Length: 107
Image 1: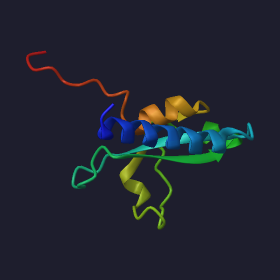
Image 2: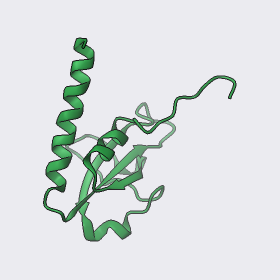
Image 3: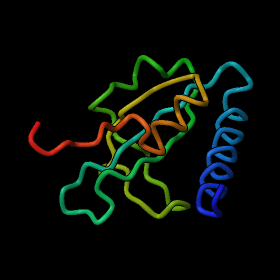
Image 4: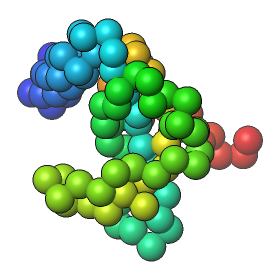
């Protein structure tokens, strides 16, 4: 594997480990939010946040906004919920945009 591929595998493994840690108590759900602000240089950027599982019904796909995060340096209103999950691999795949289908010219 190239250094770039090794780095991507290492990043994925690190993210899976972090999200798995959030989920290990069995009372957590993770929301993946995507920046949808058309005027943002980070349009399409995704980030994950852990939530108490009992809040899952309040997390509405396509509507719920991310919490503000001074630590991450962004304003939550730009980010809309794209996924809620208790599966670390699914969360990381969504954060890394594995779920996006590339556009094919002429289709």
